[in-house]
Structures are given as structure tokens and as C-alpha cells.
Image 1 (cartoon, rainbow, N blue to C red):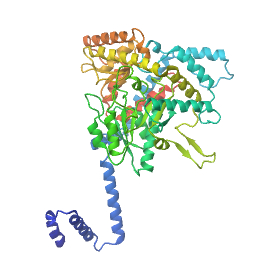
Image 2: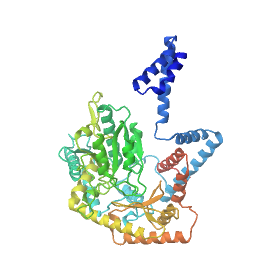
Image 3: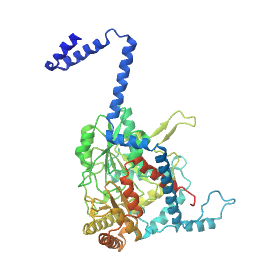
Image 4: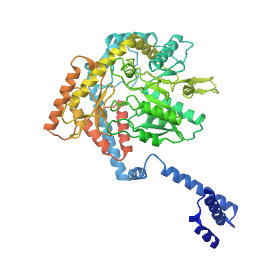
Length: 555
């Protein structure tokens, strides 16, 4: 021990890494001197396990305080009185939501088993017509944010007929349905060309934006593991990007790290994104535009980071994918966002939004097939034969593929330019009108079709609830509290935008003159949800909503 003490006194004079290591080695040897081998092995293993646990505990997305709070609420909810109270409240929420859904269908009864004998086509049509009349919102008038993006009757009739022609087809069997295969290949190629992909670009159709995003996450996760040798891949995603990335992270056991926004522009903070890049980063994400505020992230800067650090970059254009390619020709030029940027390796775009195709259709595109190969699922040893699919689903609807193809060729390039011009003009008009209304403000500088509104004076959800009473269906957002309108073709109809601005001005004036308790549905729900520190409880409230959606009960 005296020799060790003497050596430790020299520690401050040593400046080489080798000297430090030699000193540590001598100290370890001293500790192990005379010890049996089994004790040395157990102590080494125990120390290693402890260090790994400490590392995993300390280096997570959540802070120690956040994890401490989560652990506290988890334990608190196990206390019998607390557990009982929470269960009763959740039951109340479920019943309330179920009753709301039942009111929307006039408290009519549900079919809970197959009819003894099949209904006639006439009876089925009669009943289906009754179902179609339920609900208080008349989307045809342009009252809804997003939801229905066109509604043109000629297009509706065309897609219905085309769908009928392919109703029994399945893209899983391209040998049996070669026409549907050709349609799908053409949809993908037209979209790749639209986003300035070259002959090497490729992609596939999916069931929606969520699947397109999840498939891109899978492609980059598998590439990171199988090619780059990354054992624990993680993706950097702006906090404003779609929740589909969270779903993908959960399903794929992929770590997601949320990058903060610039609170003025509502764009992703590029300094923060750069600082968060590690050797485990398998993909960078930017939105064009993001859903909450309609802002386009600095895609050029994200693509440059991708090139610098050799990391794939995904551009999520699910919302505006069939607006932004046409905006320059429509008179609203944008910074580059597509395959013209070398660093962009994939793009997702929904044909079922501003592509005006039927719901259940989207496209994910890649710069080259090496990325798409890692998206594919292949199992060569199944007893049923070699099984390979491009997407999550096996069997898919050929009718949706055919109807999407019909929507694209029906509008053509110029048709999309014309619609884009009308939509952006209307969105700009609404943005300017909202900025002129005292008591509310517009978040950032909207780039495309979404206008997000907030207030520093009153609860913005109260505005949403009062607009709902006037027939409007707006999107409620959180963190920060806000609402938005996603402008569609329906809002470009005569007087719709004027009526919207008139209503929102009058409602805002009434709120400012007569401040009331925030007791509306949205004000109560979102006000409470954002204030609850136990986020798992908020998640269970969402379960109540989903349970109610599938409920056939009457309370």
C-alpha cells in the first residue's frame, strides 16, 4: 500500500496516456494480488454489468428527472385507492365517448351478427344510404380541415367505375393481374419523375403515409445493421414530424430522437440536429411540409448534413407531396426539396391527399434500389414457397391501385398546377386574414396549405369549440396549444374562405368581449391532456377513444 501511495503522488506529474494506463494496471494488479481466479472473474463481470447498467440508465432520451417522475406515477398508480379512482374515471371517459359516437348515428341499433338470410341489393343500398347521412358535418361545403381533399363528382364517378373494374384484383399476384402491376409501376414512375428522380430512382405504392414512413424507417434500419454494422440504429426526427415515425420506431425497435424546433420559424433547429448526430444515426428526417404548422424544414441543410456524415435523408412530403412539385409553376417558388438535392435518398408522398386518389394510397420513393432492397420482406424457406413482399401487407387492393392511377392521369400535370394555384391562393388569403384579427396569431410563415393559429390571450381550444358550433371541423394541436386549417379544393369554392374568416373574426371578438370558462369538448380535453404530467394516463385516455370507435354498446 505504501508503494501505491508513493506512485499516486506522482499522478499529477504524468501527462501521457500510457503512464495513466500503466498506473491503473498496477493498481488493478495490486487489488487482485493473492485473489482466487473465480473471485477476479466475478468481480470483473459484476463491474462490467454495473457499468453497462449505469450507461444505459444515464444515456437515454429522457432526463433523470423525467424518468423519476414516470417511475413515481407508475408506483403511485399501484396504490389501491389511486388505482380504483383512475379505473372509474377511465370508465366514465369511455362511456362518454361511446355516447357521443352513438349520438352521431341518432342512437340507432347496431348489427351484431350476420343476418339469417342475405339482404337484397336494394335493401343494402337503402341501408348504406342511411349510414351515409349520419353526422353533423357536411364536408361537401368545405367545413372540414383536410379530411376530404377534392370531392369532384366527375372524378368520384370515374374512380368508382375504375375501382369496380379491378375490385377482385390483387397486386400480390402480378402474373394473374398484369394490368394492375403495370398501373402500379406507372404510378411509382410518374411520382419519381415528379420529384426529379433519374432512371435509377424507384419506389412502391403503400396503403398510406404511415406505411410509407414505416417502410423507409425499416429500409434504413436494416441497411444500418446489415451494411454499416450499427448495432443500435437511431433516427433524428424533428418534433413537428408525423407521429408515424414514433409508430415506426415502436414497431421496429428503433430508437427515435426528437430534434427541437426554432420557436420563431417553427422549422427544425439545424444546430441541434447536427449536435445530435452520432455513430448510431441511421437516418435524418425533414418535412415538406410538417403537419402541425404547414412549415417546410430546411431540406437543403438537412441533405448537406446527410452528405457530410454519410447518413440517408428522408423527406416526408405525405401531406404536401402533390402541391409542392407544382408550386413554382403556380407562381409560388420554393427552395429545393426533392431528388435534385444529392443528399435526399427517399421521399414519401400521399396520392390520397392532394393527389386526389381514394383513401388508402401513398408512394414511397428512393434515389436508388439499394435502399428499397432493405425495405423488402423476403423469407426463402417457408413451406408455402419463397415469399416476398414489397410492403407490410401481403394481399392488397388492386382497385385502389387502379383508382389512384386513374386520378393521376385524369388531372395530368396542368390539372395539378391549376388546383395548386387555387389552394395556395386561398391559404395565403386565410393566413393574411387571420393575422389581421386581434387576439390570435399565425405560427411561423406557412409555406403550403396549412395555417396554424394560436393565442396569447385566451384558450385557443375555446375558439375551436365555438367554430365547431358554426359547422367547422378544425384540427386541434398541442405543445404549443394551437389549431389549424388544412386548405383543400373544397375551400376554394366561392365564399368558403370569406365565411371562414368572418366566423373566426366574430368568434374571436365574442371570446375577447365575454371571456367564459373553457368548458367545450376540445378546450376541456386538450387543456387537461397537456396539463397531466403522467403521459401514460393520457395514452390510456386515447385507448378509451379507440375502444369507443369500435363499440356497439349503448349506455
